[in-house]
Length: 208
Image 1 (cartoon, one colour):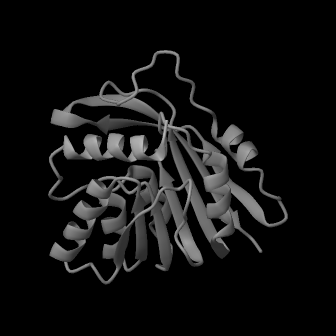
Image 2 (cartoon, helix red, strand yellow):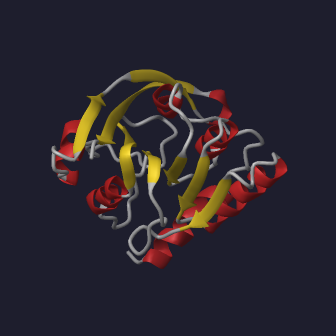
């Protein structure tokens, strides 16, 4: 399917959801970043904007990107309403074609899954190369299907963090895997519904 199809699909997904007044950050981001000094960050697939706003409140300069213009415009409005527009740059990117410019201390890719064609390994490899020495790439993927997930395919397979790291294929003399595990947590979905889900967490640090 085309890029236009993907953009239209995700615009429809976000337009069908009421905009969250105070979107929450992802748990794995908060537990990873708490204690790190603020710097420059990228939020790949920013969605509702909870991660970008959480980082900005802690002094990070965040470039938040999504293929959905609806998501990007909503986040820009939320940042302005909170006086964080000097810390949050919301940008629409089709990661097939473009990637935020610059060097970064943190790049976060939470649940960057899609049913459309996307060379995820190439995107994550580009992200790793955009890190400054000492910077971290945090990749958090679904390891299970929640009852409210948009993809309810019973045959879907979720690659392990180790498989994701192997696909990115970064030289170990320049990048080190700091974490690769599959923790479980209780997640809250639409309408307050809860379910136990598995996250696949991969944390890579650029060492040189």
